[in-house]
Figure 1: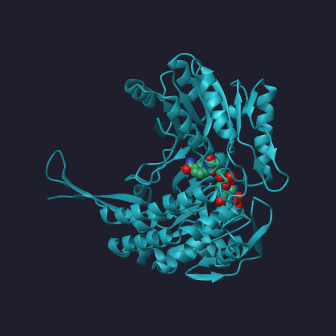
Figure 2: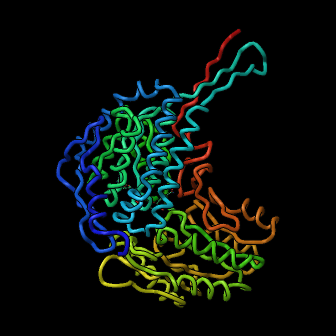
Length: 488
Ligand code: NAP
């Protein structure tokens, strides 16, 4: 592991607070939870295990801080976010190493996530001072119509393990900008980044109680009483669709405002007229970013029959040449999956595809006997009945199928309960726009394999979720519109 010494790892891990962050204080939990390095299964640290009662204390703190935070001037809220952005960028190396250690992604990608995650703070620091209403005359005259925006109130944020920083900043940024206080529960597998972030926010000047962090091994037991508490006004969740469905049900009790960033099953459609250099580059990003463990990961490659052979061979050559290993090591491009269960799931999906007649062009197996590594894999001739076409693979496996007419390709792309993102490669502007209109997703990448951008509205339709994060839309999720009718 040239460059990253054991002393450096101890320094970065040792600097992360391991308690619960409630009301500006770090407190012990009701037990501890071990955090593992997925590249070798070793314990990196132990963090506090919050009980459901401690979850309620965090909500109490957020409720207590809500009034003052909402009254804090937008410029002040914005400047705290701006300082947090600057601190994050200044500490890119520490946050990147922390994420690589607890989640596994290669260091270069972790650095990219620090920049991407920090950008949500910068973007929303700029949005904080642009919250406005409007004033209009009713069409019949007389009455004036005044609308004002107000913070929705205390927010509960639940985040997944795959982007430990960005999934948090994408929620904390707009919530703080809008004037909302937050309780955040990071994933049990990757709590360290959120704990380090809480410490950084304090340094940036965030008052006590405005952001509270609870780490726990009892996600359901801790979350449900918070969600059912009438003082909570907003739930924002990123994670799997089954858990999202359950949380929507729980939210119905208090008619909570909810944002749900759920699972994906992205089609990657390559048309006959695609520029294959761009398509293969795009495929590498769409498939291999984050080791394939992204909601936006291309899950089904739908390639025109006239270019399928060349595209498949070129993708297999690129994926087969990737360096698999521990994310902190120089030159590594593919880190471990998050845990053993993830490797088992990917292995089962590949076995099922092979049973259905698929062929392996490269990969197709686990790598090594330590840590949770799976080889970059390309499968061709995958029939539409294979389970991986209806399930998120969440790993480095690219299944390829073919199509003839545009109608067939688009029908295949839309043949899923999910609707987060789709990618389409074509050199025709008319085809690109027609296809973008017909794809049933919240986002479309045309001739590009990545769509995430803090300045754009990220989110899905169908079973991929509700609401948008980022862009001008992002802050709206944390605001209520009040209308005042005025007789003149
Ligand atoms: P997950 O199992 O749904 O977990 C997500 C979060 O929910 C974790 O913090 C988890 O806590 C918590 N959780 C689990 N069960 C819960 C319950 N009953 N009540 C309250 N909270 C509960 O998903 P994951 O495996 O971490 O993440 C992968 C999924 O996230 C994929 O489906 C991916 O597509 C999706 N994702 C979507 C987006 C998007 O923007 N659309 C972005 C990234 C990921 P524990 O960790 O303690 O279990």
